[in-house]
Image: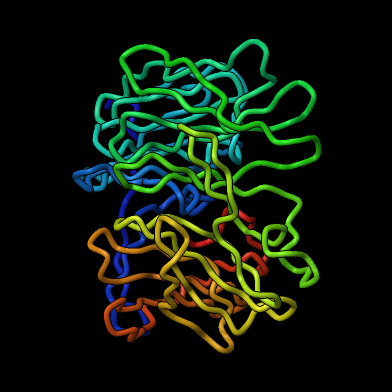
Length: 343
């Protein structure tokens, strides 16, 4: 593309013996990935979506890993026109569709869906006039036929809406509206045939051991077809769950941290019904922060959120054996922004 920006790779050997690639060389600005619950690679692995503040505010970019060049997607001069104000951390997030070569993005008034290669876009859904705003990058059902997003009403109440992916704008239908003062967010959907959602609702009361289990839930499971809403991820008193995401086999992974000290920390998972609890990895002294599972479900990578040498750890999910890959040293305690988390 004529508006492509050079973005060169650099190769380095980590102290642990792995080859590590730095895929952006824009050292004068921040380059960050979207949140761990979104798909950021194209299906063929050629393109990677990330955000950068090289224009002064964070905008979304598409990186061509073969050509080593990037194209600005959002914002003034970007390839995709957006109406409304950015949400989700100033264009940090987008989400690649599970079956199509398209990705979704969001403003407070409009959801967009864009072709990965041509960057031609269309409206996925408009915010209804009676709602104050949309507030979440779309999450897709496993078959890609439906999607979900968060919304907010003029009185401040928040909820979840769903729609169908088509060639024209979808009609958004509310499937849940929370009561006054209850925050709704962290909406994610598993890659399963059955369309279900997990959602966080605040205020968070996980640290209070006196609360009953249903009050200490980290996440609730929502059936958008029936409206059934029930506690989904609940840890025993003295622990709290964070950073949940759906793995490729339809299990929900999360970090189980010790209240007050963070460590010891474990990475657990549950099945679609919230049962079959499994522990995959743990550390007595390392503050495990965020993780992801490989597409084949054979291994996991977790970061550590310690000041100083915060490492990336690769875990064999069959044996539990773990190895350090490298030390990105991008902890938020080291004068880095929240956007510098490893995802």
